[in-house]
Amino acid sequence: MSELDFKSLNLPPQLLENLDQLGYKQMTDIQAQSLPTTLQGQDLIGKAKTGSGKTASFAIPMLTKLNPRFFGIQGLVLCPTRELSTQVANEIRKIARYQPNIKVITLCGGQPIGPQIGSLEHGAHIVVGTPGRIKDHLRKGTLDLSSIETFVLDEADRMLDMGFFEEITHIAGFMPNERQTLLFSATFPADIAQFSKDFQKKPASVEVESSH
Ligand code: ADP
Ligand code: MG
Image (cartoon, rainbow, N blue to C red; front, side):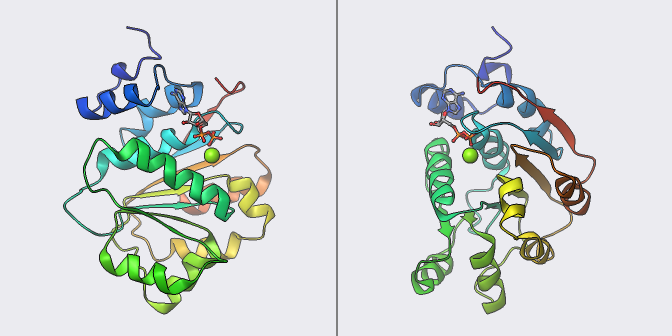
């Protein structure tokens, strides 16, 4: 068995089968270098370019920790834009198929808030969204982050460029300190280091060059 084989990780057999069906034959570099660590619950800074398979790198530790019988938000992924949030949510849904009834919802600006509140009332396991709209829901009291176990900052450098630093700090204050925080970014300007200091505990750091 190759060290790039998903079978080298201690994953549930149904998840392995689903990854196989999705055509995920081998781990990408970022997956192979981060999953052994993140599956132990450790925080991570992952530096990798677009197309390197970052979504599965955070979705797998998030999903394997999740309690499907508890309809509370256990995973939160912040993304810079609505398009990226939609892509990430769809990718998580595909990977989550091995367990029935995992609900992943997107909360982004530029969309009516009413249906989002309705979805939250029905209960969900994972939220993917943009910082501004997540903050709106927290202000309204329509989003409860007190059961978060996995917090993901995806494309963190772009979120900082877009001026989301304060929103993200505000959002993090609604989550338990006992959680896993995974930060992904294509570049590492100084403010990312500050971000990591503010939100992470002893993160492992992984950097990959190529996309595969
Ligand atoms: P990134 O967030 O790094 O830009 P994505 O997570 O969106 O990358 O993945 C890029 C594409 O690669 C997606 O279409 C995804 O389904 C696919 N992919 C991810 N991991 C694997 C893998 N191990 N094997 C095959 N395809 C993969
Ligand atoms: Mg991505």
